[in-house]
Image (cartoon, rainbow, N blue to C red; front, side, top):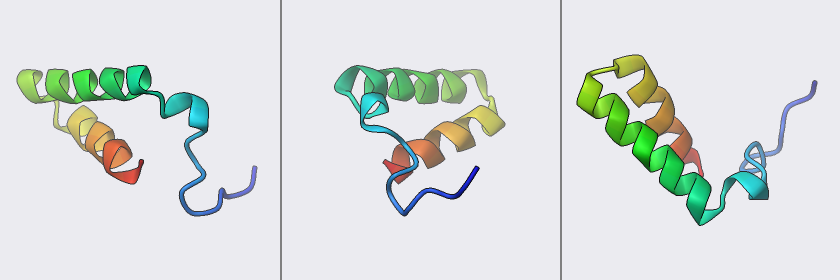
Length: 49
């Protein structure tokens, strides 16, 4: 597997408003439960896209 070009690692199908809302919900859930690892991953992905 090769590396993606900058900004192309997340496909357009995963950048829909519904998928972004799911990611935001995951971020909120991680923050509410205190799951630092999940929060860091979700925050990084959200910042990337």
